Length: 137
Image 1 (cartoon, rainbow, N blue to C red):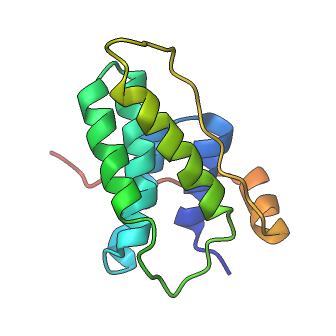
Image 2 (cartoon, rainbow, N blue to C red):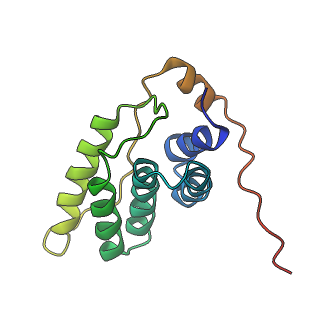
């Protein structure tokens, strides 16, 4: 079974294209899962896209490099995604970003291919609950 936060990450990433919310829910999941490096890598992909969308090329490069460095870290959980395809796309994105000064290009979204039909159904029918924010007052 997949954790609700992981399903929400995929929903925000693929359906809503809301990389900030991806970060929020994956960070919570990452903490629950003992700060696993592979989950951190998925978080960093979303943050890298968030940075690029907001014009922070340096931040995008940094986060995508960090994500790629952790892509082969072990995790006992089930991802249900085409991890290899995702990281191949991230590699190509990063290569383009590194040449951005001389060859700028418009932001474009990535899609995480979900290969587990159960997970795909969960993500398609996701009604996010989000992360409980602490009262700041």
